[in-house]
Length: 162
Length: 432
Ligand SMILES: Cc1cc2nc3c(=O)[nH]c(=O)nc-3n(C[C@H](O)[C@H](O)[C@H](O)COP(=O)(O)O)c2cc1C
Ligand code: SF4
Ligand code: FES
View 1 (cartoon, rainbow over the protein chains, first blue to last red):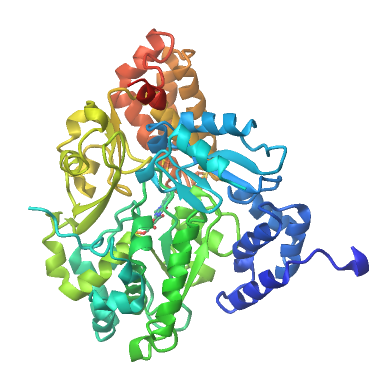
View 2: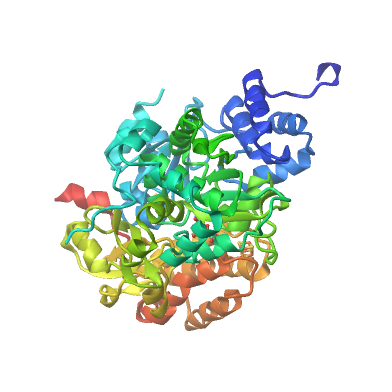
């Protein structure tokens, strides 16, 4: 990096974090919010430079930030698709056909779980209960919940993604 | 007689998402009344109501509040548990989505009672839209003088902040949640000290579930006596949200007096899906022992379910019909616990891993009679030996599989695998 400055969070993310500082007694407590912001900035995952940026911003050791990132399912250390599809496979969804939804999505996208389609458009993964068993079987596409799904419905949803 | 909804009375009325609309529906009167009541008196009322925690453990809320030390030498906190990650559970989502101010009002009353000036709402990271609803409602509440330096003109200061998790079941465990809030891996702490004494940022902290807190405004407005006469008996009081899912016609949240039976809930939910026969159900989420169909008339309350060797837990009622293989269902839950174990305690880390492996091989027809004994041994090793209750939770369904549904396991062992092929749900539907 030129003049020794490491990677940085964008202006908007830094402003959001600054506003949050007074809401917490420690800056360490800003770590989860900061990682959410960084992941948004870096296209849905956290490359090394994103982790360094967060560590630098909060004055934490990068190793500590890595340790936190690896603990949580919503933080990704590998590239993901522009659209992220999380299909619930826990019991209530499994009882109503989640397996077939997973098969349909894999078939529609032509990739395995956690792989990105060659055009970078989508990736999918099986997920634990998303707290929406009333619409089982269901999936979360980016930030939205969808269900009850059928194989046809999930194909249509995927085809509608840019 | 149909139950008059209390906690879900505003569901379907989008007007209540604003302070003005919520006020039109009678909202924030309880907060005004509460602020005019001495904090200790408020704690006493919640004790008298018999309200028990709706997050899983059923601990009396007023008693918990009473553990918070008096005096203002250290900050105090309320951390509202909106992590809602117990498989089968979705009631807190409904409460937050449809009536955010009821929840905020409950939090504010709790803060007044224990004299906490800061409330964090720890919400699971996947609830992006629900976090937004709360943030909008909180901003509105600040504007309307319900939060901030001078709550409803009382001089009481209250700050409220939504804090998003990032996908980890263990962060629903109260001390895992505190670790996560403080910016660390969500690994549960050694207890004691309990959070009431050393909680968030080293300070006294109340942790309550969303639904627990949503009950509080109603206790304050209508009185503990009113609350107490709802429910099975004086140890199981108040309204309750049941999350019905699985093989039922209309899955969803159903509010009744605590102590409804499965049959009563099924009737409201349109019965079993496709009119099939009930085989088994889990009354309290993934962590509860699975009960056979003949327990369908047991009141779903804390004590009645404990007496049956199961639990009310989060009141997530997962219904399974005759086509369900219980080995496969339990294996799915075992995989969940294995994935979510934080790995600090050997019995939990090893036990959840082994239980998934053993159930895998039984389901695949590679199990042996010794595996049943192995499962019992795993259960004995995991129960009560760990830092947090995740290990006990994992034992819940596992032990019931071998104890209550042993013949189903036997059928797998004798027949070289699963006698019930996994249902091809949509293929079946396409054929009719
Ligand atoms: C593994 C584990 C996960 C838990 N998850 C949740 C949860 O998602 N939501 C919740 O309210 N309580 C959860 N709990 C219970 C909390 O530890 C705590 O008892 C509860 O939030 C206290 O609130 P209450 O007394 O109002 O129920 C969990 C407990 C364990 C052991
Ligand atoms: S019981 Fe399991 S989840 Fe709980 S602290 Fe120990 S290893 Fe972690
Ligand atoms: S099991 Fe799929 S949302 Fe709960």
